[in-house]
Image (cartoon, rainbow, N blue to C red; front, side, top):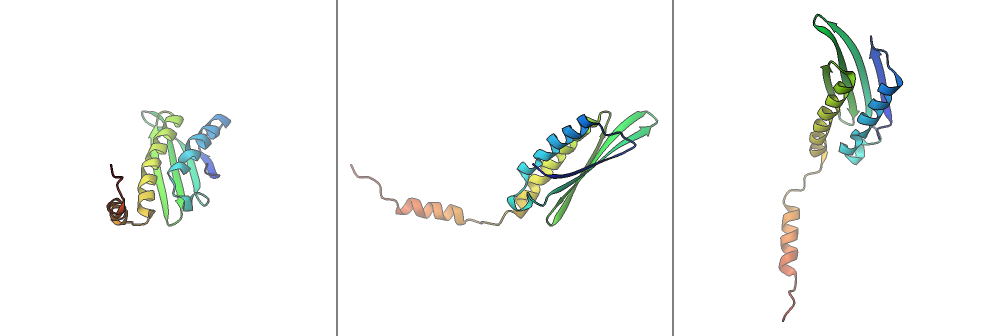
Length: 126
């Protein structure tokens, strides 16, 4: 679980159910983080209620601070919890790309090592 989550509301009253839901959904994003980034990851969540001409909308803006990169995701819908779900999916996609980017390059070493191991293996005789 991501330990450091800051939640704030702009023209939106934060209730206990919403904060629990955000901690549950966004706290699980550490599954997609590389190991070196899990302890230093910080989430800043801003929830907004926007009055538009065609009705009220809710915006969820999340900033995830990682070593070497900040990841941002934003969405607006008619329901705050749905906006949190969509933002979580967007962050998961971006974190998968971040993890691939930070993974060390291995090249073909693994393939050649396996081929060499197969060639040196002694097969049992009949």
